[in-house]
Length: 287
Image: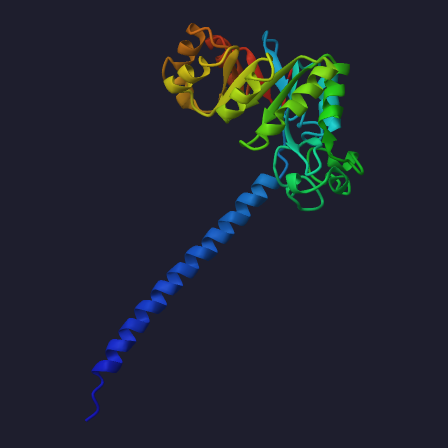
């Protein structure tokens, strides 16, 4: 009589292995599908509803007037200037050969027709790319990267304040390059960053106003910004938790400059004004 106990025992183990592998593969496939969906969502241009306010507020065009022209491009900044915005916000990166260009992402995938990490390419290499995404992109043929100098020139032409965001914690050793360029253009400038180290470095180079970007204001944030002269807090106005305590009042009572991002809802803007917050970064609210 054949002993089948070993065979049955092995079959059970094999079944367990097959089940575990199947579960892992299913999870990987689900994660891949979710990632593709998120990437597609991130790359899809939002349909903005442009609205106007009669509130006495300081409006900053987020990545330029991105509800009218592709974000962080010269046309977006020009449209912000024409619309009378107090300031135009941008994000900057340094190319491999030392040119500062305007882009929200460190990679070109979302906005350009070729894929590359900006900081690993030279300026000439990036100029071989065209913007192929963004609002009304069909109206802008052969649209290129906007340089820091082009952005500053537009700000100067329309008397807008340059609001420059520093991404990540890299290139600190090169910050004097762009602060010198800003000084040369003679435009009013505000520097912002989610990384406090960036603001500390900037304070050693410039007296321009600084703002610490936060998603949710904390008492630690209030204490932190008080360690730097002329440093404010710029918070996410779409997070209800920022309104659920007296934290906004604490910032104002401490004499800390305060702003809010990214506000596209007039009801949220009105609520901010009621709280005493009047520096508003927006995609689509105009005067």
